[in-house]
Amino acid sequence: MKIIIMNITLMLMFSFIQTTLVAQSNMKTDTMTVYGNCGECKERIEDASYIKGVKHAEWNKTTKILTVVFNTEKTSMDQVAIAVANVGHDSKNHKATDKAYKKLPHCCAYRTGVCVHE
Image (tube, rainbow, N blue to C red; front, side, top):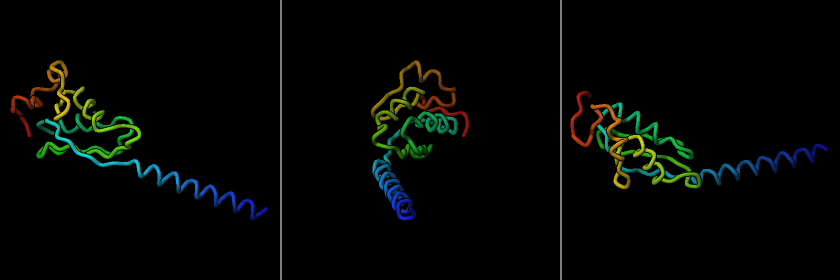
């Protein structure tokens, strides 16, 4: 009986390890330029980036680079760019609609180059 339990335990462990390795192999880190001005932009861009499949997103307000760690089976950088554009921020591949851009606070109007804080 102990041998059967030991074999079942080992099979479950190997199955778990294999599943973990497969899941990790689908993870990718990629970057894109996203336009914004300030800390409020940073928060908005990062929040919008956390769509299904995204594990980490970080935007640098100096370089305007958004770094995203995501599962390639669940999402893509294109989908992240669309989500970011939907909250008013342009990237190279997806421009925010005028309606979404106009919802940004005045200080976040990156197209004008004017930022009243930070």
